[in-house]
Length: 196
Image (cartoon, rainbow, N blue to C red; front, side):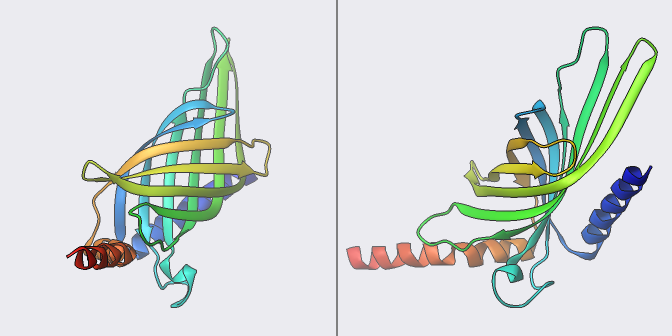
């Protein structure tokens, strides 16, 4: 019961954060976990820039909320479910000379597993920490990403890899993206002028 209350509290924090910041992007992802195999999920990102500080790396922070449902192996005659909720805070790194945008972050990892067979059923909720790092890049006019997450603590730990695409985006997100890639455009412009 205590873990369930903690789960509800964590979800509430994500919802509150989403309603008090401007939605940036949403999308879908495919994941693989070394303990849970293949999964599919959804992802949302919200701008959190200048909410923690106006200077330094944390001034560019953004919130990631993602949900993955994994197709775990299950004994014959049994029914199994496993899903994972990951609310995280991430920081993008400024780069020059490339359109690839790296980021890193940390947050909560909340898992829920259940199994039922022959009239018997059991379920468990587990919480731990999440360390993540990823890359964002353009893909056919869309914003794609690849990400690695390391779940630590609790009774369930795993390394998960995800790939997905993001849609949407407000004017604020476009402005932030332009600011991140402006050094790249400047570098290319200087190269063009020198070539002439």
